[in-house]
Image (tube, rainbow, N blue to C red; front, side):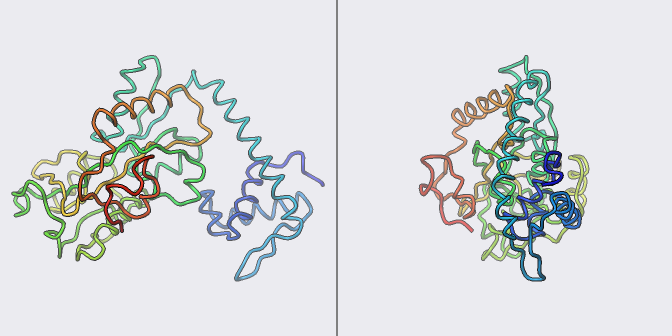
Length: 335
């Protein structure tokens, strides 16, 4: 078969993604590329191999007999290439820093990173600050980022398939209110007291769609609305400025940056929990990864971070990612 020996691994991944999804749009999303670029790659591969891999129509995509025959060898070739890349990365891992997304300076992830640095001063950790796990996941997949934290169930299935994760904490969900709001006088805010309100939950920010989805599930049937989409806000200083200027009511977690003139109150009746997982590429090999994992495990144990308080609420998709021993216990109905 002409051109087989020098086939670009990217073209192989394009072939396997389309063969798996049998849908060009979904396959393009899986690979984080434009659909037009993916179509060009498939045509290029077909030209190079001199075979037709797919039958395309306006309604469906199916594999040809040649496509079916070549699919498993292509998967094995990709697996071998990934194994080689992991071995090379492991060989040089001691010489490069581990790049860790902590989301914000006031976060569970920052606590874990601080503990890891104290435990292993000889390992270099470099912090990044993404606004959400969906945004960070694109860089985890491409290798630009090593570790991130957030709601793993909020990622697309095809993205989760190439990432490993470890639940580290269930943060209590809270509401950020102007100090003069009548609800600010309460120690805890029952969800029912938010009926009729709009809460800012990151709508409009493509990097935080997992958090907006969490909010919609939590608000469903409770007469609470997610605030309309707003342009992505870059930087903590700009976020604080906008929250104060617009006097937003914000859906937040117990780990949240302090905003002058605003107060943070945990939600109750039920108690919503925001799942935080440590997330990294399955092929990652680096000594800092085990240090970070050990720090997360230690903090989770001493802080009882994985406890479900009575009346806890989790979204239904997140129930499938509970740590061992938690599934089916303590968590209330999910949305």
